Image: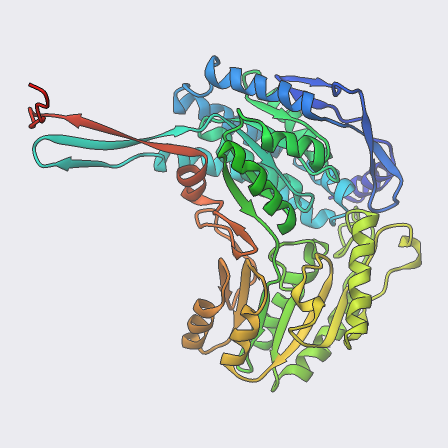
Length: 505
């Protein structure tokens, strides 16, 4: 970003944005009730714009449009090669709008723009990846049964699917669901998080520009208790994919049961990062700091519990103290900012309350500083909770902010037991130069994803998801298109005159 562009971005940050409408059947429209809600800036807590507040009537309209587009329109029966032209056109348009998307994401969420720029590129790749995946991997199996039968499978789209997306890294995570859903031939109702509507609205503009058929993609903004609940309860919605916190995920599963919907849940985490005394010290330190304090600590896979072997604990803690003092807390529109404001005032108060809980539980609290000129925003400084023990609330409950609990351990068995002694099981990280131990520990930790001597680097081809209270199902790779967004159908073909019992003859 040039200096001029950076100055323009800062000026724009404080400017009013246009109101956001719903997007139904290819048109931007107000809600049936005419209601709006305010969208505040994490940086100033002043209102950025207003957002149309959808409810049951709007969900009904969106589902009717999506159902018609699937059953009567061309989308569900379109040739794959033709459908992929739309999918790849969306990716190209995301690339064209990358700078605007990065700006809107930072404006809406408080994430530093240096980090949101990477998300726009990843979002475009989500569409290109699923274009390739559907064309190469969405195929069935065939089996001969003696000389009498051929049995084969085909994978069909489900129909109308509901996607409920989170406010942390919303554009990248939204496209991670929208891309496979559309690529496999489904029609979509998106209910974005009410706290981060701007890039979802931009996605609707991009999809309209890509000229997808009317009704294929729809957005109903609103609150979980109204718009979200109506989407989950609607009998014509075949599946719900949700990313968010665990309690909400449990409610969605319960409410989906009445209509026997498929559900995919990517939920909370309290992920351990384990550093043995033979680890590459500097690399483990870099990974621990990045893995918790990037994305403002609002990351489901964040290593919020850091287990340090007693032989290196003191040295590692001294290095952590220095790092948290040096993390650049600043304006999210400044390319040098490393930590920005939390999403809203309510979450800000929640994260601060956990720091107080840590003090009450006996932790020593070490924090960086927030410059005085930023005090209007929802800034929590980078925070260490030292002398923590795994049974503390701050080590058991998801804080979802820039707060790291540091725990000492001595033996491999001890640290594996502690890592697993939590209700979550999303991710984990192991740092050791004993590769046998690395594999042992990674296989013993109860989590859906483990990294050995690596930070949170992902490959879109592999499954993403957790165990225990961290979710059900997997996203990513062929798991999304074969296990969730399509349904297998078996065709049995007789190729000979096999015996048929002649009852009643």
